[in-house]
Length: 63
Image 1 (spheres, rainbow, N blue to C red):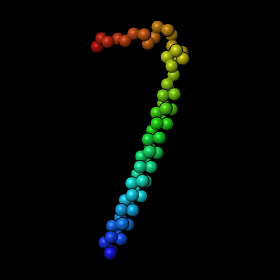
Image 2 (cartoon, one colour):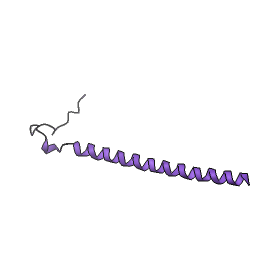
Image 3 (cartoon, rainbow, N blue to C red):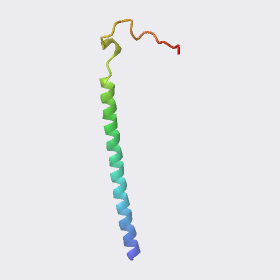
Image 4 (tube, rainbow, N blue to C red):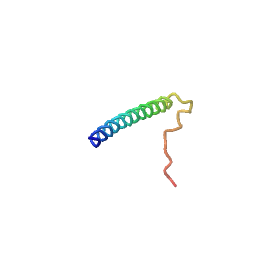
């Protein structure tokens, strides 16, 4: 009987641990998404920059 009780307890603990890990993974994903969104929103649109119109139109490919 002792084996069944300890097995049941171990399975319950494993289920709780798995639930905690899933919660932590979801929370980390949400934090990463918020950080990514903040970075994207922080990028200024090209027309919003104060550069002259001729800048950023050509790429020098000679090395």
